Image (cartoon, rainbow, N blue to C red; front, side, top):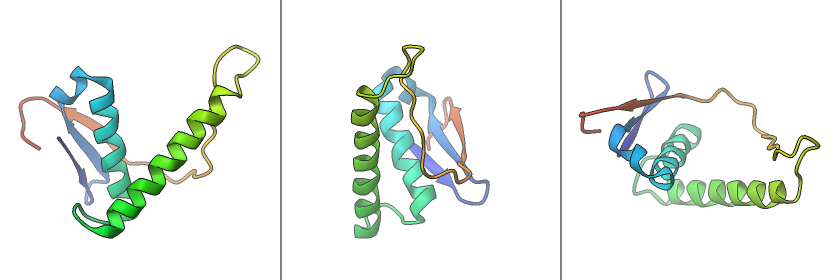
Length: 95
């Protein structure tokens, strides 16, 4: 569904993942965690890192639901300002 290209520092996601927002976003978060943690699939270290990241995302969403800005929009602030990889969506190519 997706892959993190360590050499190019980019996430590549198959175009068919765009059919459902939850599928695309789940794949994106999964690949971004590979980038952030440096751990591969099927390792306990990756599973722990992904679980922790999902907890952070959930916490931000809960906090944001109680913290709408004066303009009526929810504002999320990231504590981690590290450079994030680019995200590419590819059609017709198995990833």
